[in-house]
Image (cartoon, rainbow, N blue to C red; front, side, top):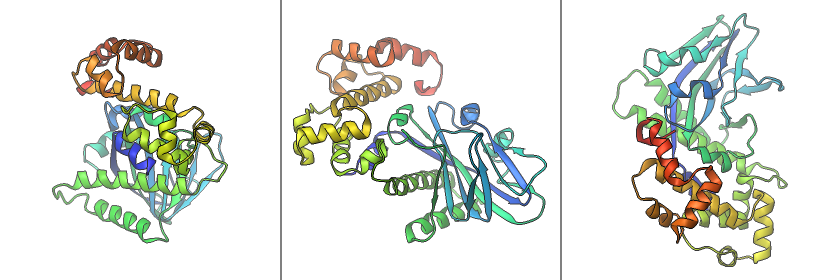
Length: 327
């Protein structure tokens, strides 16, 4: 049972490659906090995660108050929480504000960002992933400021990098389907990075990804995400995962900080919130779809989680005026 696949299937994701950077030393550019440019990149998307794929050369990445991080060819950098940072090589006199140029790149006026003093060349492919806000409690939970994984050295990583490079090289070709291919490749880059990061976690690590790797907890997570409306009990989950009730509760709580059924209750309410945002289904129907037998019980649980009852939640979403009710 593959918990990561189950949750990535159940959480809506979008990916995009939005520009290619070709820099010659000395050079530097600053990336703003994604919250500040989300309205340009992906209106209505609740969470944005940025990335840089280094295809040639080297650079240094700096986050305020943190040590410098050296990166080189083949490195994929994921910035899970969209924190502001700089990327540079050498000692540039100024740093280009990449946020100020986003409008031009997104409009298609520029296919490559070029800057620098004519020295050593570094090339990047830069982009982002959009996902629903409850990803913060799932695969984004507990992640550091930046994840660095090198894609070179094995066939899967090299194929991914070469595919992205090929698509970027055809940026001005106008061939049909290019933007969809770029988006799918961005998602594939993100998923491959998460897989490699999860596999490299130390044994004592806790959190969602560490739990997904654990045979017992990962099996339980996969079942809960595959069948969220099922009337699960701890005993049923223990039988399905081939362990005892006490072992399941202990391991699940150690990795995720809460017992299985508490986790399930929160996940059901997140699914309900999505249905209220994106469909016109009656509240009773939404409650039944996520596993509640009683509308009253659903209303109470929803209000505890979101602070307002489901009907008011739906009205507030649609009063925001965004397409499809997305916030």
